[in-house]
Amino acid sequence: MRATCHSGRVGRDLPNHEEHPVADDARILIVDDDALVRILLRHMLTKAGYCTPHEARGGCEALRLLDRDRYDLVILDVHLPDLSGLEVCRKIRASLQQTRVILMSGLAHHRDDVVRVGAAAFLDKPLPLAACRREKTSPQARSMID
Figure: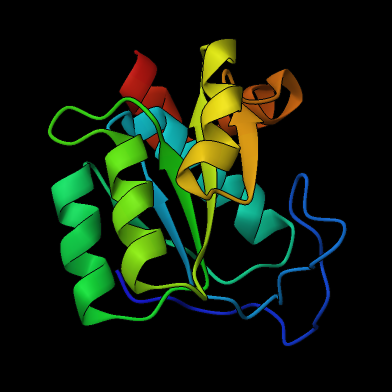
């Protein structure tokens, strides 16, 4: 999937990023093994005016994409089937210092990992209910949960 951008505005904030806003044309990579989570995040980001993000289903796929292309932001699930999101974050921090990482997990104790692995922020799962309700009406999301 190629990234497409809906606006050229700069300075929009993502959750927990008040100090360093992310440009609307930022290249974003969503990494989660749950297709519905990827759909919801893609929907929320594009609806907010960000470029359409790229997606990866696991840590190894994410690292391959990061080797090929430059990303400004990676939204990364902690629990992935092939490689821990924490390990992926460490690898990103070691080689791609300019790429910001937001970790996400349904387990609150992972909040402490944000600083330890160099992530910029933490996003709680499940995603906000209002966004889930809106997205559940899309045909793609409906086919995932039916």
